[in-house]
Image (cartoon, rainbow, N blue to C red; front, side, top):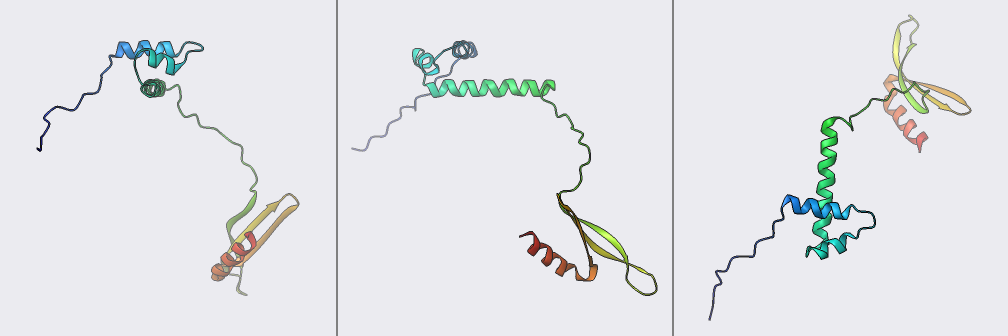
Length: 135
């Protein structure tokens, strides 16, 4: 009662490059219905959409290889910092005149500029203050 079928699975249809090109040219005509053209040739419209996508990607790759879509660097003039910026400050901290590094937070707004300096030894408190202030 158990029968094993030895029939092969049906193969997918393969279309020649000339046929694909012909169908794609018809689809590129003004006012053409991709679904109508596909069904007229007995093809699923999704297949034609896939061919169109692959053709578009192929053309983009050719343009990229030619350098038509190459990266062009853009030079921007320096602009003043908007928002907080961190920099290292040097401040006299002892009576002997030796210099110690500190944390300098500079905040620019439309109304003006505020600069806050913080001792380097208290960097964690500076970070906590800055997080709280930026909320």
